Image (cartoon, rainbow, N blue to C red; front, side, top):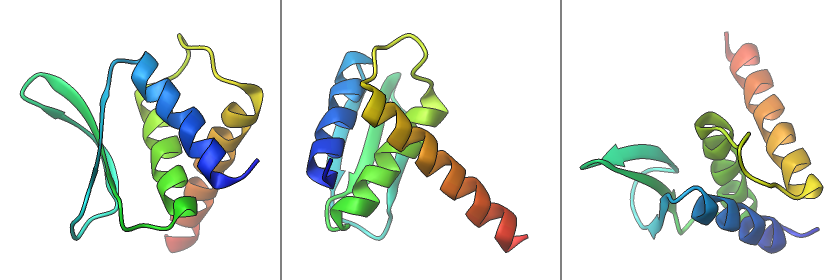
Length: 93
């Protein structure tokens, strides 16, 4: 499964959760936030597809996807990205 397919699958989950997804330019990578009582997930559109997929996956893991159907390959990608992020943070300490 390539990154564009993964991003599409992740975007479908965002939509199911009723979260607004925005791709913007700027000096940031992305993440989840609340903006005037609305859930928003912002991703830097200048990032490489691999990094965009990772940002989406980590944000969805933080939000929680327990009540939404997630394709097994997408769920595995999300879990892998969360583990990579944890290892990176542990190595930095």
